[in-house]
Length: 585
Ligand SMILES: Nc1ncnc2c1ncn2[C@@H]1O[C@H](COP(=O)(O)OP(=O)(O)OP(=O)(O)O)[C@@H](O)[C@H]1O
Image 1 (cartoon, rainbow, N blue to C red):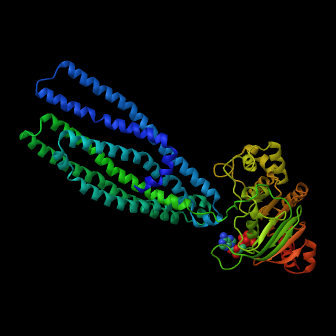
Image 2: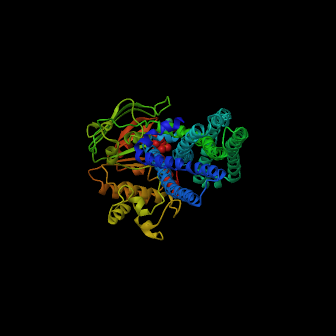
Image 3: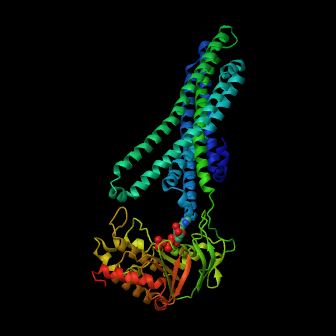
């Protein structure tokens, strides 16, 4: 029942809803106790020949009135309590989603998407059940149970009541054992559901790779194995589930037997009249439900508490990138400065960057080149605050990036990453992602700069063509250019292109770069690339090797230096020549 205490924040926030729902439920429960008493009185009057037609009609009218009132109140408590549980599920889902948006990329390295989806669906539903069905069963079983036992003991016979309750401790013991077993098994079943969810998500995302490597059969086998595991773990839950009903029935039946047998003896010996025994057995019949409900309650609560534990564990994960309490809301502007003695990714012992001391004056273009794995993306990720430094600082306009609110910092930055993601929306909405209200003319303008306008017009519905999973598939180069257009729409102080031109041909690359130069005067641009042609016109170029700046200068200066940059340049010239069918030597 700990889970109820843990959900108290929600019950408190919605106390009026829950208080009224519980009051209606209590009134219904109490009203349901009246008809058996009336039936008992009728039996006694019949036995003593005191029953009149008027009294009988009166009795029937009273029972009808109780039924009508109960009908209305039953509807009301359901709306209140079950409606409340839906609100809780919505709130938990929102919290999870909000939390997911704040967590660092590192978190997503360690958690699988399918698992996170399972938390937001199955676990939230189990908690919803606890706040709806669970609260109902607890209130109903406690109120009707205690009142029934009270009435039976005080008004009818405390001896008979005690006898009928003799089997109850056995039930309490058995049910709490089942509850513990259920908790453990339900945890395993939910984990298996997470696994299969994850597999399906990954399989569908990677379907092209799976097919290309002819691994469909292997994948299917894998899936069947996981599916079997889910079935087995859920059957294990169902086995315990299935024990609840029969156990309760046997114990309740035993209690029935005891009270009818002993009650009949009382009647024979004259210590109880027949009407009272009738009422008693009717009440006892009514006591079956609270006893059962108590069993179900354990079942629902155990699932809810297992799921609540899983969701809480997730919500307790702290984002590694946090905002300072005194952070500024103003959007940073100005020169960028890197002073990074060393940067280590979490859980690694080799620095990804070392001795990065770099000034990027406002309005200039910086080229970042280097072999794969040399640290180009890492440099950008530090500026974006995907990871925070433990030594050194990065500043914009003379003030540390850590002194700005995260939102403000990211407003200053427009980022087109290496492997960009397009949403299943129209091309227009994808480009206007940061500002859905943007003018169409502006969308077209940035698409022209990114040299993708003509391509878009060739699609069946132009800018309204849906892309992504449910629409047209764009080529790698088209995707990259749409993502550049998206980054440009923000018109941010700093534009970052991280190998975003790798899939476009040399002519298109040159067209985009020259349009960018014209469009982004007075604003800073960072271009990380493998292809030197993309940075030829940059004001400054840094060459990274194993996370260090090994050369720095303009294209011409670096060529004159005759070092790594010169090497890379020669190699690429050669490659281009071969690609164009030229002859070497
Ligand atoms: N999240 C991470 N955790 C640990 N190490 C990482 C992480 N991300 C990158 N690295 C390591 O940091 C180094 C630099 O990676 P980075 O992605 O910055 O290189 P890059 O120059 O951008 O490469 P590419 O040109 O292939 O994109 C690599 O050795 C990489 O394995």
